Image 1 (cartoon, rainbow, N blue to C red):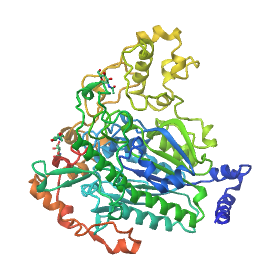
Image 2 (tube, helix red, strand yellow):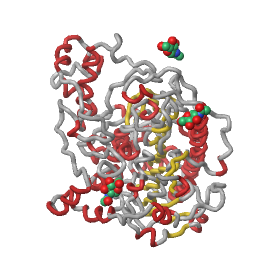
Image 3 (cartoon, rainbow, N blue to C red):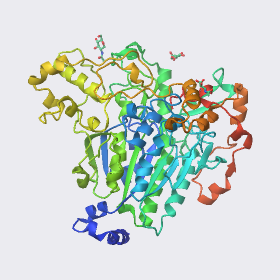
Length: 608
Ligand SMILES: *[C@@H]1O[C@H](CO)[C@@H](O)[C@H](O)[C@H]1NC(C)=O
Ligand SMILES: *[C@@H]1O[C@H](CO)[C@@H](O)[C@H](O)[C@H]1NC(C)=O
Ligand SMILES: *[C@@H]1O[C@H](CO)[C@@H](O)[C@H](O)[C@H]1NC(C)=O
């Protein structure tokens, strides 16, 4: 096996021998175009130990690679986080800060024309074949799946709403074709089978590939039906494959010091009003935790299969495998119920494990990075730096020695933590006004930063003074007056999305104008400014939003046209042939119905 791997590596190296000359084994492999497999779950925590329950991730990724324990989501919500990753930008620059119009979702992504210059297209320019299987983004649905189909993929097989969050209704659109469903199939297993089929097509091929696998697990399940009362909707813990339903009966959420504490531990905003959870509530959360771990088992099996297939092809040693998620999750910490979207560590600190040529093995790293750094880092691995636009905010994370000397590094700053966030030092003697002044100024820069200033905010504050590289440097007393005089961060009201007009000065960077904030202005756009490039896609999008105004019962009937399985699902991972046999077209009636899914509460309720 080892021999085969070396042989395959040499075969690739010989095609670009000039580039590879002189490197060590690892860095030679690192310099030819490596394959990248990106396994990307939904709402997986780093702080509640979920990775420890994934044996293949442990054996093949953590032990054979590096665990980055200070990796962060740019926003603790699926859609903004995913778009930030796809564009290498902070959410205030993508302007996608919610789940549906006017602040987020696939239609917003297209209105902002973000899909015309993003990660898959950069990878393509770098010479890669790109494959995507699973959930890319919220509100990619059975109406807008081809309006337009995401660009840059040689093959994509995307989950479509409103079925993305129903584990036993696997509904996909392949390459923008009308969606199909797989009868009696567990969603992650469908992704697993498709992933293997895609990888097997790489046998005997040398062209580098970027394969992105994005199951919905361990996101909560959302279901619709009259049995769920007035709201018609139910959010419940994720559903595991039946073969994993019996696992972990005695496992509980780790009882960290911030878990449902006897005394309140958070002192800002609504946190200070939260009551302690009672036994019934804690028991419910513990079961939700077990369901999450069980749902992750099918993902873990997929990781095992990916490794096995890469090994068969002799490509394991020339492939980077990156494991992460979109945002974190909390269950009972600081007395909060289940969810995300907040700024607590449970929601923003997320798993990141990397293995591949030149990546330290069995190593835990404290490097601080965030999701907007991933795209530029993938491109650096792919030898495609030239294709990363200057407006990208993220920098290159030093996963390998070669990347350590990259000219566009991630921000140097790291920080000491109070891991359970038990003590708010704001207002105490530990947090001096000098410190608070600096942090305030830093936030002023970061909340409107663009490209370079996101990676090195101190340059904007001290343009002609290279002595200030870090917070520690800035704390020098000679800058006290400067920071004291700086206007403090404030905003008009607490909104659940980002609106530049809501932010008070100072603005260090130019304010982006609030774009197209309502469907009314969408229409104005198409009526009054037909030549505006932003308006080009509008007729399609507006059409996709037309609503037939239906009763809940009618919407429920339409949804049920994709039948719920009659038996328990997920006894084994289907073969490619089995999966094909289970494939059915979505009924025409369902495809032609114009349902405004957001109106029926799909996104607000679940915080997808
Ligand atoms: C909770 O607060 C009370 C009153 O302030 C204090 O006496 C007690 O030690 C605190 N308990 C914990 C676990 O911190
Ligand atoms: C726990 O709290 C819930 C409200 O969230 C309440 O309905 C239930 O009766 C309480 N259970 C106990 C045992 O106090
Ligand atoms: C869809 O529903 C949402 C939520 O009710 C509403 O705000 C939006 O205006 C609707 N869109 C259209 C085009 O009717």
